[in-house]
Image 1 (tube, helix red, strand yellow):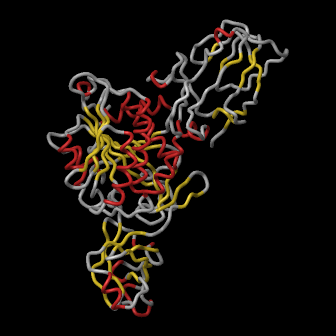
Image 2 (cartoon, rainbow, N blue to C red; image 1 turned 90 degrees about the vertical axis):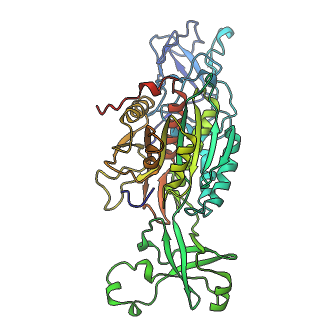
Image 3 (tube, rainbow, N blue to C red; image 1 turned 120 degrees about the horizontal axis):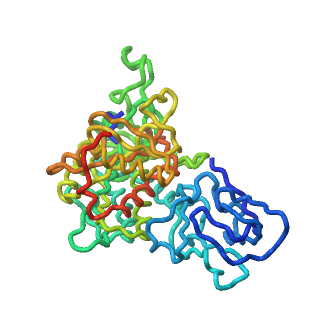
Length: 487
């Protein structure tokens, strides 16, 4: 994002539990055959799973192998739209996929059976086993993105990791002349298929060497940087060889009096690589890049801290979307685009939108999460859901569709008011060619444009799943229904 822009609760499921027979599930499927009789007391501990209506009894066999099998707060009241994902007519889905990801820790989606007396319906409720990675697997990939530089206009190290991750998930992948990645996943529609562009910038903020004095490096910013947090920050200087360094400040008494009262600004900050001046001059040149050299840290509550989460958290969300689409039919072509230069020029998104000419587009970026002194309408609680952009830069019809879909999926979604320029790729995409209907999804993030940004993994997962469900639900005539309706 451009810097100028502004409990789980589980139902315990024992290995065997007795329930009423000749019962209806909340999705309407009935078991007509008596199940094995057991005791005379009906103990219904699955208030969120099954709505039992009769008073006979059956055994429920939990094959999940975990004592906590189903999350109570966000369980399945909706059927999955894409039946190719399952082999049985009875489809269950979790309403919030971040809950789902915590249950399954292996590559098998999950399977369970009702134990019944009549073997003819023994597989009445059987889920297919899918070679489907749980969404918690996104964390190693995201952490790997935070371990490389890829500064704005110099995205190569990040682009390489993203390309390798996306190759198995798409049909074709190329690079634009500005260095953005264009990954095409073809739809299943007939004839000329409409296309949707999902854009997330992969570039990061950083520094550039402006002069070298007595072995110390003077630097300026690439992208907006909050210089208050820079002193003491470990960095990597990308000269003729990579040199670790640290950002330092001169002794206070040597600074002008005007610079002593407030946070020390970039003109007075230096990078020390620990070498003699002659050696530093032989290895570092003016114009060399300087990136943060801090490692990502997993905090309590499924929170990840690190540099460049703006906007590589969104790259991870788009990756989750592509993984989800492996098991969903979608009629539209999907362009997954990791854009370049968002932090400086927004040029990557502008040129990609012009080149690909999608019928509609969605940009993903971070937004401000609530934190000390940032608790007003411009900030959103971290870990409590996604944000949906609303403003002149974004199309109200798309906002309405995403809001309705999020409500249906029980994914918390808040309105992110952006009256003018959104400060994201959405702006340049919207005005490409004759204009492209564009939407903006946001991931709340604390301490933006610092080396210790914070994001909740569940919000990343929510954005990825919301996108996948939106794409899989697009009909051929969706574009013809788009109207500029603000109500």
